Length: 199
Ligand code: GRF
Image (spheres, rainbow, N blue to C red):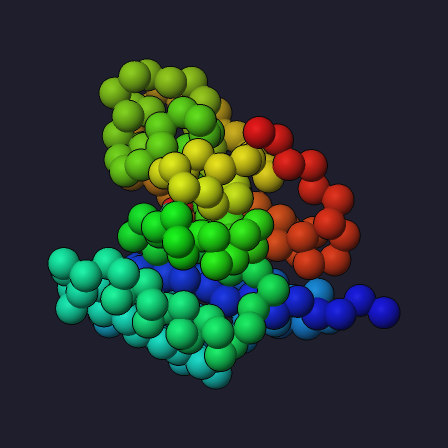
């Protein structure tokens, strides 16, 4: 029998990807369970979404650790040590994790990013797509390593960019794609382990 995997979701904002994961875990409770949601932002709407779903929530306010990244990360590591997740899923978590943090959970941290990596790591991906008149865009799920948005790619989905698309319209399209892709990838990681890791 498949053992449901324990996942922790790290957020920082609206939490629409978290919402998609909540729905997926409720639909397939034998595959994965969200055992906790950690936010670096006390005002993140994602915390409300988690509470509505009766999930344990934790806030480690990054602003209180402005000059003390190690302390910020240690607080998160302490929570993770209690929760003992099988997989840590970043979903709008806007802080770069240190080598020490990543090494505490080798090959157990994934992220979703709104671009076709390796194109456009970092912020403002939609703006760059429009500015460069790209004809395609998309979302990528990747393992987290010590470089920003540069870990091995697990899965990627594309959308076509239309001539009348704007930054806002492609943002919505890519988010809709993410809401399909992230639960799918986590489901596969939780149940099959067959996803090919590309470097
Ligand atoms: C998503 O576009 C995700 O790819 C990026 O941050 C955004 C988070 O959105 N890492 P939400 O908080 O899940 O709505």
